[in-house]
Amino acid sequence: MEITEVRITLRNEDKLRGFVNVTFDHAFVVRGMKIIKGVSGACFVSMPSRKRPDGTHQDIAHPVTAEMRNRIEKVVLEAYEAEVKKRAIEP
Image 1 (spheres, rainbow, N blue to C red):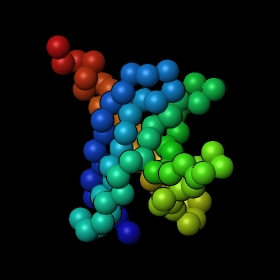
Image 2 (tube, rainbow, N blue to C red; image 1 turned 90 degrees about the vertical axis):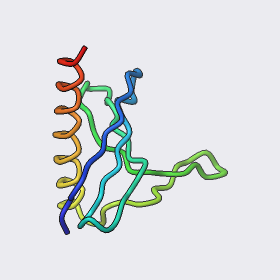
Image 3 (cartoon, helix red, strand yellow; image 1 turned 45 degrees about the horizontal axis):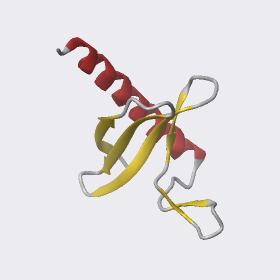
Image 4 (cartoon, helix red, strand yellow; image 1 turned 45 degrees about the vertical axis):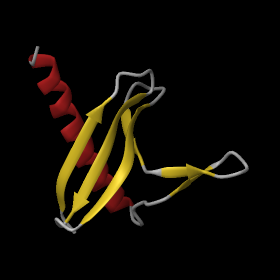
């Protein structure tokens, strides 16, 4: 499975750094991923989720293997860094 497109919408909030839509094989889109700045200062990718009645969150879509999670996170964070640099250069 190939990641064929990553769209980033930047946010400048304390923890939320952006929203992400990822397209796989030009055929399937997962919308609503988030780029979160963790307590250590490093960013990570949060999968789209919904809030349950008991207040916990449940992923709507998520990778089944650690390998796929790592691939998604690597590609998304690279696209995020490129978008941040692009926005910093533009007026």
